[in-house]
Structure formats: C-alpha cells, structure tokens
Length: 230
Image (cartoon, rainbow, N blue to C red; front, top):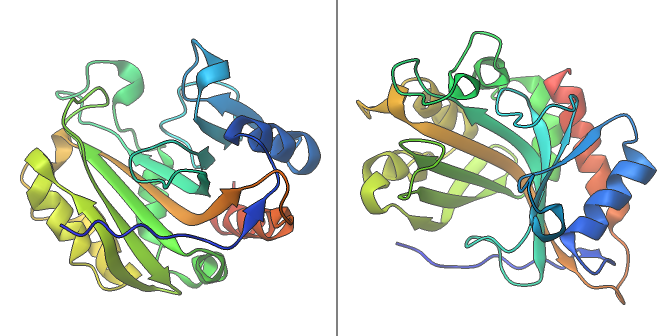
C-alpha cells in the first residue's frame, strides 16, 4: 500500500469547503443545485455536489463534487471534480434509489470516458479517486487515489481491506482505456453487488489569505460539463 499524499499549489481563498461550494453555486453555476452529502446537518457536511437536479440522493446523475476532510484528502485541502457512481443489482440493493437502471449516467460514462470528448477535461484534472464497497452503507470500503497526466494513470495511495482484489484491479490501470475496461468488465465476481464511486479532478488548498485560483477550478468544471453533455 502506498500512502503518498499529493499536495497542491493552487489556492482557494475560502475558510471552508461549504463557503467555496456556496460561492461556486451563487457566482458561477446558478443553474445548478447545491446538495450536501449530509442532508440532516448541512452545517457539518464536508461533501457537496453541484447537480443538474434538486432531488437528493443523486446517485444516478453525473455531478461535480466539492469535498474535504476525507481520509484520502490532506488536511486543509479540497477536492473538486466530476463524480459518477455505479449502483447495485436489484437483488443487492436495499432501496429503490440504489438500483442501477439503464438511465444512470454511469452507463454513458464508461462508454464515453476514453473518447475525445473527455480529453480536454482530463487536461485540467490531476487525480482519479475510486471508492468501492458491497453497499452504500458498507462498513468496509476500499479506495485508491491515482495521479492523472492526460490519460496516463499511476498509483499515489490505496487501501483495500476486504476490497483488496478490486482495488488492485483499479491500481493496475495504466491509462484511461485500461480503467474503462476494468470498470466495464472487471475480474471481480461480486461486481453487481458492489457500489463504485469515481471522482476525477484535482486538489486545491483552502487559504483565506491566499491567491485565488477559482477561475482554474471553474474552467475544469466547465470542461467536464461539456464532456458529459448534460
């Protein structure tokens, strides 16, 4: 297991991830809906989405994630990028909202992710994060953080636990085409029972007294919006 943490020199002059998420919504993406992961205590939510639809949860949609204070995010940093999720089979899902349907964006994402439409967006991104477990509420999650240079991938950090086999499949991917193949047809025999979250973007440092790289962040988000065609 690698435990390297990737630090960034790009700055967002805000006190918290919530402050920055609200700024993005109000100033740059007023047509999007700002949704918290923690719907029951939004003041404490450290994971936010910019979504095309107001309903929450938004598992089935493409969305922009703005996240901090996660085990894979260094202290004082925020991760911003495209967020896509794979749901469960009807037999595996405890709730209707978690059943993978034909209309889930995941299906189009794995079909399009290696296409030219995504290349411009990838030129703005620096990392790919993958998270997987055997349900949405799994107590055992595995994850890996990959460095992205255009369509080339390399491991920065991984923690497999009970999910080691599938995490090692992700880590072995050397480029986006490899990752597409793995996400479409993995060796794991429990894939229909497995939730997968993918986030592609980059880290920014929160520093209220620092310079402002918000335009770079907005440029990346717009590139992903153009690629996903929503």
